[in-house]
Image (cartoon, rainbow, N blue to C red; front, side, top):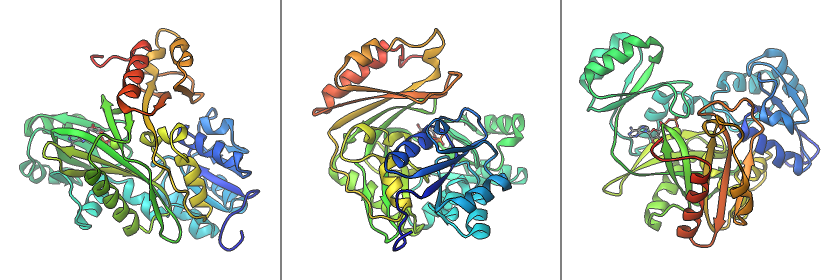
Amino acid sequence: MSGGTILPGATLGLLGGGQLGRYFTVAARSAGYEVWVVDPDPDAPAAHFATRHLCAPYDDPVALAELGRNCAVVTTEFENAPASAMARLAADHGIAVRPAPDCVAVAQDRIREKQFFAGLGLPVGPWQPLRDASGIDAALAATTWPAIIKTARFGYDGKGQVHVADAAAARTALAADPGLVPCVIETRLTLALEISVVLGRAVDGSVRCFPVAENRHRHGILDLSIAPARIDRQLAAQAQAMAGAIAAALDYVGVLAVEFFVLADGSLRLNEMAPRPHNSGHYTIDAGSCSQFEQQLRLVCGFAPLDPEPAAAAVMVNLLGDIWQGGVPDWQHVLAEPQARLHLYGKDPARPGRKMGHVTVVGSAIADVLAKALALRSALGIHDQD
Ligand code: ADP
Ligand code: MG
């Protein structure tokens, strides 16, 4: 450490070794840092590039003690890496944990997260908390239908969510899966658009936002991100200001992603946040002047944020395991396209719904880039009607 900053040569700890951790690890190792990854999966994507892989549960006391003894700072790439493990690292081992465990704890619990947004005076759609079965009647009586039941913890990529048309359907769903509770019951909104803000906040409170991304989901999983989002500057600025207010209220350090819904009248509603780099920020690897992973590295090491130059037009297409079901996809079209880059995360097996990689197309005009990306997507066998 020098003046509170962590210099190359130091060892950084990472809880979680998925694809986000893989990119963080590559960024850190390219800049001369060592990275120790904790992940129970022996074949964790980040472990392929890490200095050391501690193959253990995220809350394993021996692994945490190892990080505590050897790392200058610990960060996370996976919002379900327990905030309690991060808190223990800070309390018992006295090392810097960025973002702070409290920030991660808020993002890990949809009830706390929505209360936190609302407490800041930020707009959220109509929702009801359901903490235990005794609250069902009151929660259902207060809900506007149709709705989505979302388990409060450990949901991602649309998992732990049930769409329900009315109170009777909600009762049936809750009876069929008591594990959904505690949960939130959210009114299903008619969305004009979904957007996300990925920002970086430094120890001294300075904030830099990446260009806002426009996100399309299929079956609750991100399918496409378009950046910059095709929205007016005012709306983009409004979303960035809200995300900045969230980061400031949390005294957040690192990269934070905030997801928004845009309604037909052009107004915003907060959806959720992720205390880490985000799938909708993957375009920053190939477009613009710095990637979200370089930014995360700088910020967790205590440096000032990089200034992301406005990106050229970029479209990212997620590649899910579904397109591997007939064998490894034919990459010819993607690799033959000079504006496209193929990313594969080294995951095996390719289960349906599993994020296996992505393709980013970069250019100067959004309409051309989008047309190219959609053509590649369809050549890979990804179709809207599936
Ligand atoms: P996850 O943690 O799985 O990303 P989200 O709450 O972001 O969970 O839900 C996934 C997707 O489902 C959203 O990006 C959006 O497309 C859709 N969705 C979620 N909540 C709502 C809602 N209240 N109204 C309409 N669509 C929603
Ligand atoms: Mg989401």
